[in-house]
Length: 433
Image (cartoon, rainbow, N blue to C red):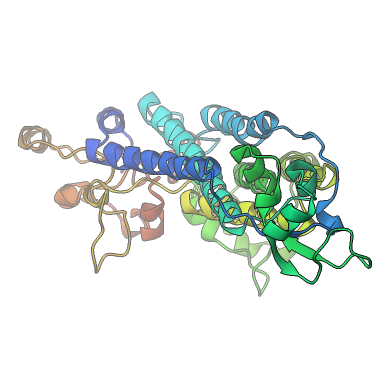
């Protein structure tokens, strides 16, 4: 089915007519992500969080207090603002990429850019908000003293104070010979500022570590997806996985001679190649290395123990990976694209018996009876909705004269990126966009 001025106009119209139900459903998603972050902020402001009893003779919490090498403001700039700006620039400049047909309407191009931007920020927001909420909640529950806890606590070492606040240990007096351990409650502290004291007992897990990995590892995954930075891999039997072809806008692969052909005909060593090293440095070493530096700074600043830093990095890594895969296709096989939007009829609920949130109705708003009558009267055969998925009500018209090999594969429909069943490219070949 060739691209005609009528079909191009229909595509542009569909691109601008996105269902309000879908927009509202994603607005709710944004509100919930912000709500997750707000819950984390509430945990951070609790005045009466748990404070684990400690030993006055414990050297691991007897380090001096030092100011932060990486301040909270710096952490927010590096782990939140920088990834947000970088993903925005990439989404607006590099999307939709070299496989886009030259005749693609501007409205459709901009809708693709805005959608990639939205998914990039939703993934980043979900990663950071989840890490923040989990970390702050665990801090309040654990109440573990920091390495500088005693320096901040300033305990009252009088015999009467030790007697009143002693909760365990074999010692009775701080001056006992043999340094017999005495376990005391946080009420022995002369520092009474609720937020200062809460921070002194908020060692596990490390918030800097979780927040930095949640933001910067997510950025690394995003960059690896957009720039195809991954370790080369060939499927068993010497064939490269053809999953990528399904999701690529250019569904026709070229043979080295310049003719369309299959990669399976190539020798295994020519089926894939390593990406440039400079992309590896920019996409992996810089963001991950920055996150590691932030983590290590918490160690030499005496703000966290080793297990606190490791636990925080693990939490941030999990939320980053989960949030990236929640909104984006696999790095190796996804050609750098985010998942498409939910369909109009499944914006809020899918129900039992359906496979997922993508249906045949696409992104576009429901058409009125008048619009359908006009399209029927004009004999229009290129009625394609905003998401590029054919309306089942026009299936008979849309598929008239289309050969079986021209039909769109179900997996490509699931990705939500097919704009026309088989548009003609500028070089005369046919491929998906």
